[in-house]
Amino acid sequence: MATDAETHSGTGRLEFSLDVPFPSSREATIALRSLSPDKEPRKGGITKQLTVTDNLLRWSADEARILRVSVNSFLDHLTLVIETMDMFGPPVDP
Image (cartoon, rainbow, N blue to C red; front, side, top):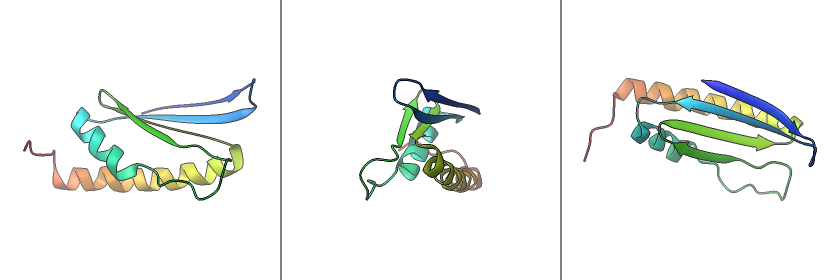
């Protein structure tokens, strides 16, 4: 698992990215569908993006104070998804 945090000097925004490796791209896609954020009720402040590249799930957001709460919540949900996937085993091809 790799993390990256940086401030974009042009915009002054803080960004946090987390690469989470999964055994397969199918499992990463299942996690993506489980963790995809709902549309934010307020305008601005935080942006979330989940993408799958090969077997990596990437999540990023901006704005420091709200980001901290958002990251903690995301990691709790990610832990639950991973534990559930471990409990049920690898997905069966249709």
